[in-house]
Length: 264
Image (tube, rainbow, N blue to C red; front, side, top):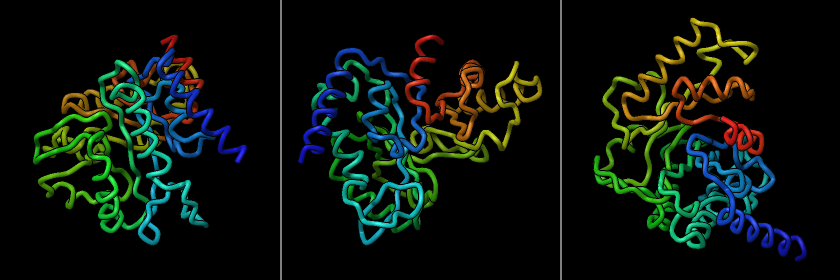
């Protein structure tokens, strides 16, 4: 009982912090956000505008976990950790995740289980929260406070064929030039290590920097954001990625990145 009271108090303090002092960072993506002590709330307390939740479909419920969860903890579901808290924060903050911030807030859902069945359940759950979500009628986009996009085991053909949807897709560099619109595929993601060896000591080698700039520019030319996961947690790397035009910086270091963003 005491633990519940403490958690509620912390949630209340987080909401007050959002109102009072947090400056949203439009390029900050919280990698594996659910692994932090307070999923979602720690990211919001540090100004992040994109959070990542890995999900498994187990017995008709979506559980948030990096690996297949051993138990069935109802406190670790997508609804409990993200959908319900986001709705509450948005209600508290006058219809926005951050008061006065009208740019997209991204919820990246990384599907770890079988894509079609997982997406079928996800669609049902998202429908109950449709009033806070970006929605799509064919290619017509109706912006919402939260934009959901799917990564991992993506049901690409199913989502692409839908007339009405509440999700977009996380693309890959190979998807560039294939006429996927930003409404369908707002983000292009890949492992940093698939392209670069530089770990942040000294300047980035010229050949790697040229490749980075070309990838970032081709992504931006299609109206999309580039995200490179597993990039080194290094201020020099973050600065180089941002200067090259990378749209979302993938990081586990919430506080450290928030401080960096204030100085960048």
